[in-house]
Length: 361
Ligand code: PHE
Image 1 (cartoon, rainbow, N blue to C red):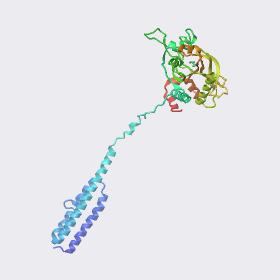
Image 2 (image 1 turned 30 degrees about the horizontal axis):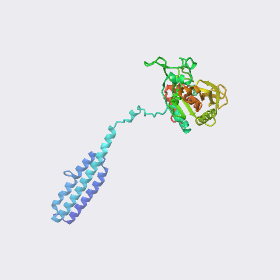
Image 3 (image 1 turned 180 degrees about the horizontal axis):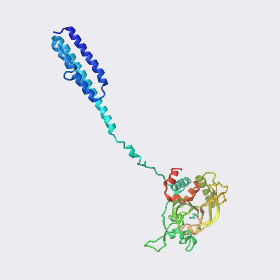
Image 4 (image 1 turned 180 degrees about the vertical axis):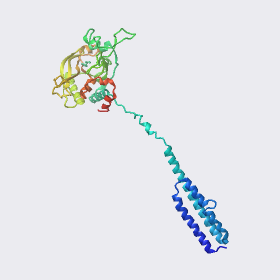
């Protein structure tokens, strides 16, 4: 028979087993080590079973005490083992995933990030000009790019055989419903003067931006397709002074206050008197350079007072109403503002050129 002292030493033995388990379980780093540890503590002939065997020699009260201690020790070890198992399995899974992982990012190197586009420089200028004129109380109108000869020429007081109607200058459209030559790609935005006046609503304060087409051989200052913006004002008491003030106001608004505008006498069939308007050369700021042929000025567009013949063609009484019109190339304007040497880059669609002007305005 074992006595009380024996129970005490058995309980101490249990404490030792627990302590050594706690130390060893902390040191376990693989599942194989854990299986080995489990076998040593819980397996047949392991620590627990060999200490449990001692129960046989205890008195019945001590048996219960010792039995409970053995139970709690076994529980403690089982819990420790299963907790460690969960941790080790998670660790091994993530290690394996790390080893088996394929790095897909290396393939992304070849996929270019999509680049954001932007409005074409000419479109940006067109919108800026529209804003300037809207700020001055103008409406923005648009019209057809395919025009009748009547709107493009006749109504604008450009009769047949006028040099401006030379077949070399226009792209005519061959269409089944009319004589060859009665439709063409508009050579300027001025036919929209006629359309607006025909609509019968007066007064008119309008700008009309749009594409125009001429049979020009492309070079640094010409392309067969370019853009103009037309201005038309028809009201009672409109004078050349209003025209001059308007031209001055918008050139300053677009180019800046250091740029002056001036009018020089010219001839257009649909305005009388007519003028060309020029601005301070934006390259040399008036000093004189190659761009402005040493004059200090650059011609930008045409303008003048609406010709009485044009009023008659659209049925407006020139005794009651007067008006002015102007028109100029948007591409030329942009070319001047950014000192772009060759206008053909506007049509090349080369992103290396276009991306330099992302939202410049
Ligand atoms: N339509 C003319 C051109 O293309 C410009 C212009 C417009 C002139 C309005 C006078 C009045 O050259």
